[in-house]
Image 1 (spheres, rainbow, N blue to C red):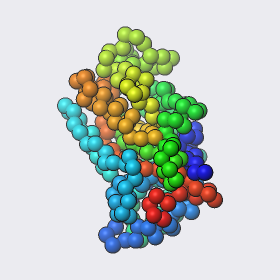
Image 2: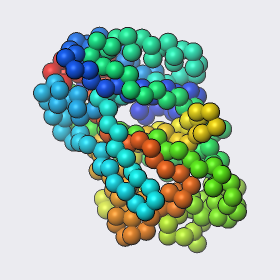
Image 3: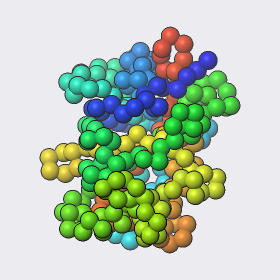
Image 4: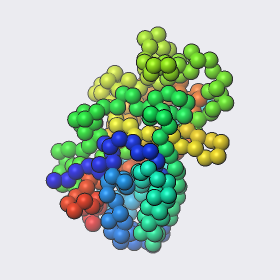
Length: 294
């Protein structure tokens, strides 16, 4: 029986590296995927497939679609798709570097490395603003139900869909806010991580209360902070049994539901956006690429 890539539901690692790849013209994508598959254990290396790669192989993955680019006053929500995505997980940045090099070498005949982004845990699952991230994550069986495909057949069951965005924080703007204004951005108090009833309607916690949607919009967030020089932010990673829940959250955040834009956009901006399908693990501890015809 197929199982999910275990890193999807596991606790966050201390360190992470994200890789994305573009397809090279005239490359043999199927052969490259066959070469990289033995490196993907689903735990220390989670793999995602973009729609362009599925189409290159002549298949459609039910539920996999293009990321919805949009705009709000003063900010774009960009779509930056890629063919292949990897989330490398561990405790040692050196180990992640060498794992990334092995993956790049395995696929280089058909794919070009597009982006590399390193991330890490800050405190106990805190964003670089200091606020706790992923507080409302479903747990245990509820997490499996929210994140993992079931009842769709061989090669699909045990898979997952993931939305990935790199958000860049505007630290100077955030630091100019009073303590109360900062809490109003998130709808939570920094001091005790509790939501408060009189938070403004645009507070992030009110915009994204997953149980308030119909149907409920639960996703399993596995986001981690990133830095590059003096810049930094959050790599937002949300796994779902479909992409519907994430799209419902994003629509409300951007005011598409009621015209109220999430306060989060006053202190941070997304600079990337992509969707991927994360295939299940098959027998022998290797990623199951049968739905890609491999």
